[in-house]
Length: 293
Length: 236
Image (cartoon, rainbow over all chains, first blue to last red; front, top):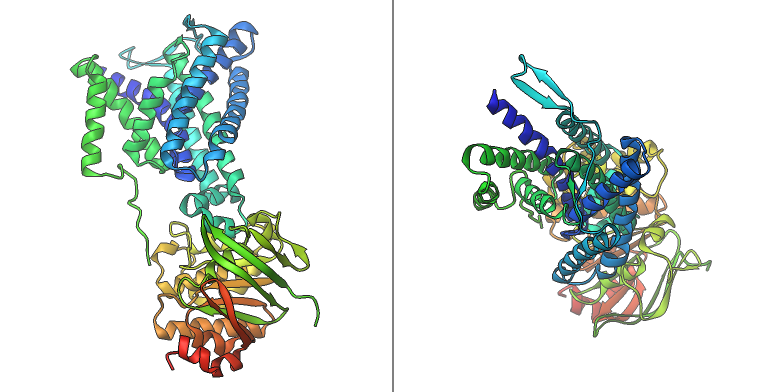
């Protein structure tokens, strides 16, 4: 039964990674860039949610909605100001800008909200479902996190495969020039991608801080890196890949903590990543790009 | 004659310091097939990409249906009725045939059933493969898809960039038959080709390009018969 408990915690942590990884993978798929400031958007989302609920006493779910709106706007603004002017620039310049943007957001948070850790109130309390005479305990936040991840995956998959905007995103990710010749506004599509990724980051922030309640300006960086790893693990650019990669990473991390050593858990996680990339360089579900001539 | 559909006046286009298009002018009138022929690197594709708004002329002007395209972004140019079938087809390989066609109709409203029927009527092969991803199609089928996709935007001018490229001779004939058919049903077409023989045989008029300049112009028949063109492009 402890095994199952660990497994469920792993799936729950992995769900958070998966939601964050979606932001990395969608932006990479369409803008072909690694947005390393994505992890810090999570932190901003968590702070907004924290202030909305603790300071202004709003309902936590309303707090999440406000955090989503603010992060969506933040994502669009960051893209417009920092990345859009670099559309034709070498990818290294864009990467460095993204890292700079990450520090900028962290330090702005430091100025606004100080480095004192805040204790984040869980959005649905600390209760738990007890199953099998209390042998198996699933906290409400765990259940909510897994549920939220499944809903987000389902909605996003439908959006990408069925709506006109979603199809335009796939077209842009394959060939921006050809997409332009179809009359698709590529810049607007990229903006939309950042908006969706950042809105989801706000949800991830609230869920993450509900499970691990310490909120600081650096809260987003490690989960951000882990989620990026998850995206690469699953095959960057692939939405099911982000989902699978996130879940696997969460489960491996929790098992490594439980059965090997909590200090070594990150080493185990990244070790598995290295092995996967040696065997499948494009990630688990990634496609090697080939051109037909 | 009436107002041309497309009027290109004295455009100069640069790639960085490379002067790719050196002051060319040409027109396309309604109902014509006009062809730009020339060797690799003559600037044919650059010309089309400039008309589509993907590249910007340093000087000179492009106007479509009497309106200057200078300040209009590529997606709005498509909306105005100017569609390009790009060189190398560039279908969306991971999307289905049907989805590719839907992307072609991106600037249209949601009512595209009639257009789909028309394109499937023109290319029955695509209808058989509508649920397949475009990457699984053969080269000829991909070319049909690229053309069908462009037609979905109900273009007033259809620009084709090297539709014969990389296709077996029998398929080249088939593609040119379809272009001639489209022309007969009233389509206005700007056709860029290296295969001068095929292009000139169906063209109303042609322009011969050489290293960024237009060196000769005439009707398709005149150019086919011209000694200069024969020597340079037709291996005669």
